[in-house]
Length: 476
Image 1 (cartoon, rainbow, N blue to C red):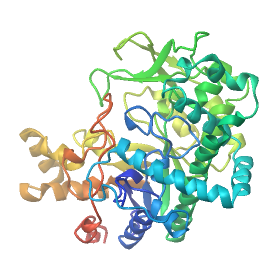
Image 2: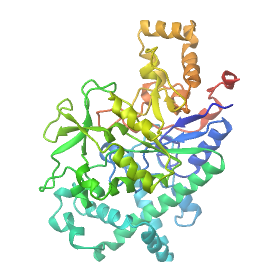
Image 3: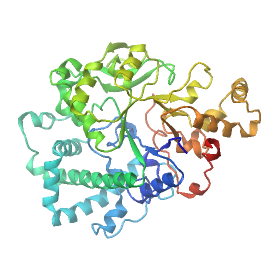
Image 4: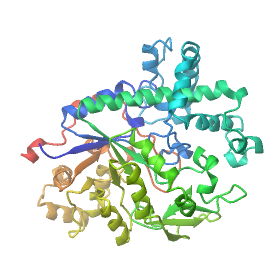
């Protein structure tokens, strides 16, 4: 079969012994399943520390990994924990707070034992990963400031690295603990990457275009963002009304100061991309259109419709990026209401784009190409079956006529087959779509924060024997 197929599934949505998917056995079992069923790609959501509302798209650090993804079972096998009792094992939704508290307590015990035996290992890791000490300092400072945003900390904490080059000695145990979490998480994920490569599975990671305001990048590099002298945002990111939302989306993210960034050839943003490429085979750039034009909303407004588009760095940025990383593999998330210049920028650098069948199936003029990734929908859309259940009668009839399939009881199967056979560079389904799950399994509702966003997970792997898609006779 020449058709290249993939599955979009967050690591957090895998089954796990401790209430969440992690970098342990579940990853390997899922990779084995992908290989057995002739899938080529596994696309994950951002692996960075979760932000407000437990969103992976509003992280506290672009380089760090989410500690909840650390496998406790592997730490038991390595002898750093005596045991890791099962916790919310059969859950079908992730309780991020409770999982985080449970894991952090056990990870602290593992850290104490590890550091007693191997302090030099952690020191070497700090040297190899120069970002990790400042990130760990940021996290510990948050703990000591009641988890307030950095611009609400006392001056000593807020401006620490303006006058110091090393973390404070009296907080080093806690700082080393955070560094240990990153050491273990990176070690475990790199092992997953190697296994995927051995099995012929290509990993696609996601990079949010923006960073979170309450994160280490803004704390250390305030001049690179739309942050005033009072350490407050004066404009924030989002998008106006589009196919995802009639009222637009107010993300509240800081806006890059591209004029300032240009002075050092966009080093901060280019370094983000370069580092994340070490964690995957392909990197999907979320909100790619912002390199051409980005949407700015006044920080004192709570209506995404009150904003304006501004010119981004365009080709100048990508020229600098490819100078430093000439072999980088990127995917452009080129969705939404786009002006022609966005597509021109994408094509200038030969980047594959995206084609969403839930948006395009009713448009006979909108056709995919072999330079696009085809999706039924992304994490921001309804599941395919949820979308199907919400179609109106005239829409169902339109699809029946388009697909020349007039048996309603098997129309969903026909839609799945149609999507699999659309010309593409690769075709990627959410796991929910091939499991025929409705919108109770939807991953995210754009423009909203908190439950049930990001919480969905599969209870166990019992579905593996039941999945019938794809039917490979379709490709004979």
